[in-house]
Figure 1 (cartoon, rainbow, N blue to C red):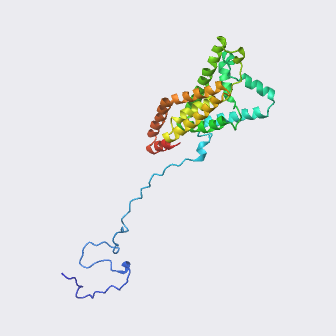
Figure 2: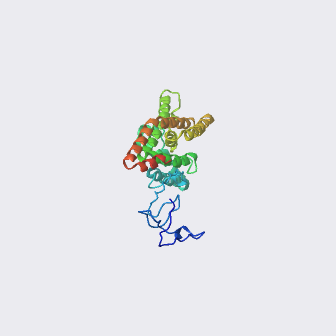
Figure 3: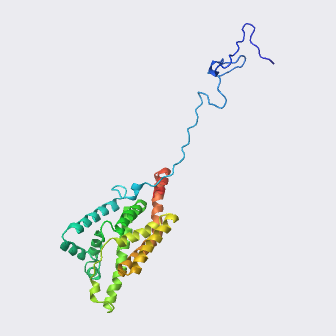
Length: 283
């Protein structure tokens, strides 16, 4: 049926090219029409609210500053690093006589381990052999910072202390036994042995177990190859063996460290799913 205008009205033609808003809003003979004019096909009306856009999760990118210790993020590594910087400045600029006396008194040789084991085990870890530019000093900052961000300060200190103490005893006790058996001279009981290298080696081995495979393999291959090269050079076999032993001690802690890290992630779930995802993605 053809639609026509009422008899008393004359239909007004729509001008060509007129905008949609100029077209009459209501149609004759159609009940319950919405006011406000026509809505172009494919667009929402003024009273229709479009759903909010779903924001896609962004991938977290590594930040350079997270490689370095901070007072709040890694308090153990930061405070320990300050102590090592102070003792390094003292050993570099102080009178050589008192510096040598302090280093000798902090040495973890057999003679000092027999008399004052607690004192020398702590005192020897307050010095950097080779200064702040040595490889193990740089490794101390990078390795312990990364480890502390994953398992916390107290557990990082425990890994460091475990490698430092056990590797020292594993290298010095055989020397004492060899002296008692007459295989080494008595002068072997007195040697200058100090530094943080055993703890750093243990921390490197522990950190490797918390990294993805594509980072774990190069880290262990590069660091282990460096230690083997030092051992083959026979510059200081006792210390070189201690480094390899400390690395093995760090690797042996992988099951415990993974449980610790899993416990931290589980506790993060209680604080909210988003926070736990962020914590698990940190590196």
